[in-house]
Length: 273
Image: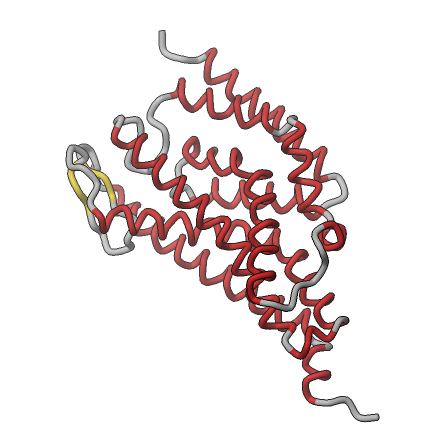
């Protein structure tokens, strides 16, 4: 019997969904690189000013309070950056969701269901982005953030590093990481594939919640290396990917925890007297 056009397309779900994820990642990283290039400003002296991550060279005096448009640009920066960093590590879960949907026919709508699941996942990280934006506002108001959006206080940077390192060894980290490492088991534990919009969104949001629980402290390290430090962003994204998709992810997380504690201790020892 000849397959219908829909069945033929469904067999290629991994290519279609994987391609969509790849495109999203490329677009997100392109935006981040554009912002980072704009904030370099050719080595200009930024003393007394702060850059707005808009990609169009907007600067404001550091003494001025945040405006609504600045909050919106910073929130957009965090949201796009989180999508670029987290989408690769979420790909196995999203691909598994599409595969289960294909095998269950999903009432002819496996791609729509997968899209809503991915939207729920990204919504969780948008919530984190809002929290990160509020934190950045508070730190900047306390004059503890430099022009590269990195902590200007070595003491505070050391505290963040040590806290991140300790968290890598906590039971909560273990629980959240386990949910992220086994896509099929996650689906089975939480009711399997959902064909309805609300069910897909909520399941994606739940998975995103576990992912935020697993990685939120690592994302806080962006304030240590610089929120717009592209190399640092890439290192953290790679660490998250290795934690989630490799068989030794748990040990990688713990090794990273030891490295963070060691780096924090080094900063504490070398604080200016």
